[in-house]
Image 1 (cartoon, rainbow, N blue to C red):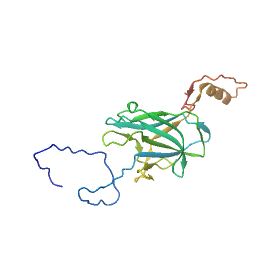
Image 2: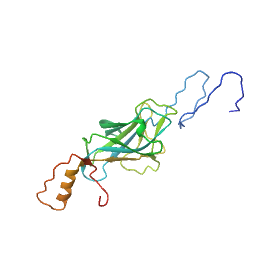
Image 3: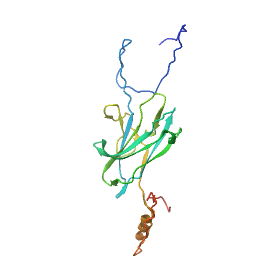
Image 4: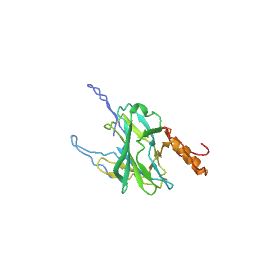
Length: 215
C-alpha cells in the first residue's frame, strides 16, 4: 500500500504477468524468503466421447486459440486414451507453429496421421500445451466454455504436479474430425441408395466424411 516516492538513482521497472487466482490465505514473508505460486492451466486436458454409434479414424483436431505477445514456440495437441479422467496412452499428436496461430481468438487445426480409430463407447482425451517454457508476456490463450455444458468429460488443468479440476468448471471448445478417401465416400453413398455391383476406385484424396445438409 501507499504511494510511490521519487528517488534518485537507477530506474526501476514494474511489470505484471498473467493474473493468478490463489486458493487459501497468503502468508507474508520476510524479504529474501522464497514464495512459490503455482498457476493452473500450464496444460489443459479435455476428455470426450463419440456422440453417435460408429467408428472412424481421427484426422484433425480443431481448438480455438490465440497468441499474446510474441511467443516463438508452438502449441502441441495430443490425442490420448482417457485413464479415469486424466491422460492415458498417447495415440497421436500434432504441433502448430507460433506464426500459424492467430492474434485474435479463432479455430486452429492440428492435423493427425488419420491412423487411430475412435470407437463409440470409448473415452478419449485431448491435451493442449505449449512446446516451450512459460513466459509472462509471450503466451497462448485457449478458448473455454464457462457454461460447462459438455457431458463427454470434465476439463482438467495441470498445476505442475497433478491434474486439477477448475472451479468454476469449464469445457474446452474443440472439434475432432475424421477423413476418408473420397472414392470410398462415393461408393458408400451409392451403396446406401441400393445400387448393386458398385466399383469405385480410390482417389487418393481424403476429406471429412460427414457433412451437413446436402453437401
